[in-house]
Every structure is written in structure tokens, then in C-alpha cells.
Length: 151
View 1 (cartoon, helix red, strand yellow):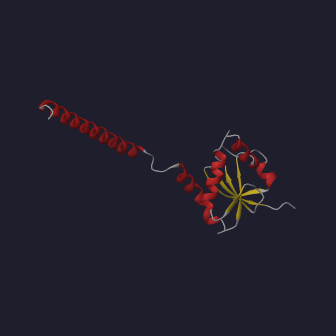
View 2 (cartoon, rainbow, N blue to C red; view 1 turned 90 degrees about the vertical axis):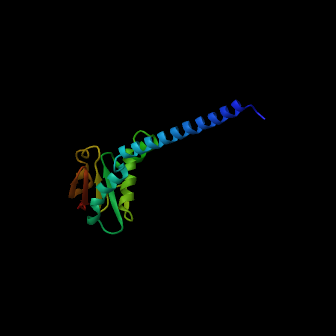
View 3 (cartoon, rainbow, N blue to C red; view 1 turned 45 degrees about the vertical axis):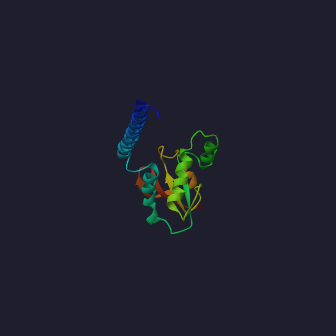
């Protein structure tokens, strides 16, 4: 049988270990609660969805719509391949997601075209070159265009 004082030391060590572990777990739990309260109420995807959803009443229930943005359409995927700027590709993918079941084509030659200008207006002459006429400007860089057929 071990001496009486050795048994007390083991019990004290175990109690100390349990108390310190409990304190650490509760401290992490409390930090998690405080961090959760500090999170923004909406995430970037929800913000984008809300912004793009304003187009829905003006679009057909299905079919394809065009898409234009600040950069030329063919450069959206080129920049993504080199990882120089994936923001434009992310905006395009989120627009497709929000407007589903409609198909969002990355080109300006369809009757209705979504203009998503997150980095400022399009280049001078871009709209005229593609025959795009504003149907409705929603502000915040979001414009719905109709395409005029060139004679």
C-alpha cells in the first residue's frame, strides 16, 4: 500500500488537471461566443445575391441572358487561369448562381445583358460597339441592358 501523502498528491494533481482543463475549455467557449457576436450579419455571397436579385422581375423565367463587366469578357477567364484577379470570375459565378435557372452567358450578344460593373463604368465605346442600351440602371454598378440589332 502506497504511503498516505503520495495518494493525496495524485488526487491533488488530477483535480488540478481537471480544473485547469475546464478553465481552458470554458475560456475558449467564451471567446467563441464573443467572436460570433462580432461577425458581420451578412456575408459577401448574401450581399451579392441581394444586389443581383433586383434583376429578377425584369428577366424571363428561363433562358439565357448575357453578361458584361468592367473587363473584356474573354479576359475574365484568362485572369483566373493565372490567378491575377479571381474577383471577376467570382462575380460571374455568383451572378449565375443568383439568376438560376436562367443561364448567364459570358458575352454581350444576347437580347438581355446584365452589366455588373464593380470596378467602375465600362470602357468608352464598349456599349456602343456591342449595341447595348440601358433598360434599367439599378445603381451600385448594376445595369440591365437590351441589345439593339444592328441594321
